[in-house]
Length: 109
Image 1 (tube, rainbow, N blue to C red):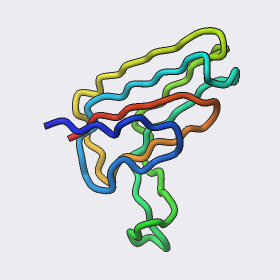
Image 2: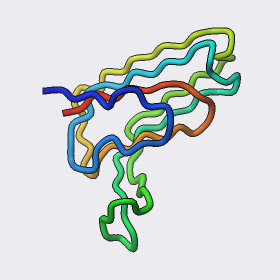
Image 3: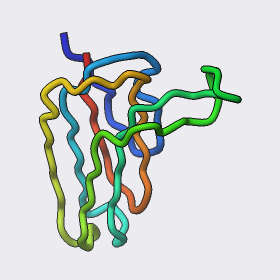
């Protein structure tokens, strides 16, 4: 059974446990900024002092996927879909919006 994160438009913990990343969908449109859109998907957990703690700092241990749209999104729409074939995220899935604005959907199980 695949689960969707729903629409994300800011840094978000998608899941805080071991899971399979199935796919990532990224889009932008006329309401997005004109800067480059850079989104990173991390195998990550929240921790403090090396121990898992809800609300702690994200470890960002392993980058699983990076999406960079290098164009003006205020005039041109951008849509991207990546099938990750169930890559394993050992710590959890964390979505980081590094630059620009857009939307991201993450499917996992």
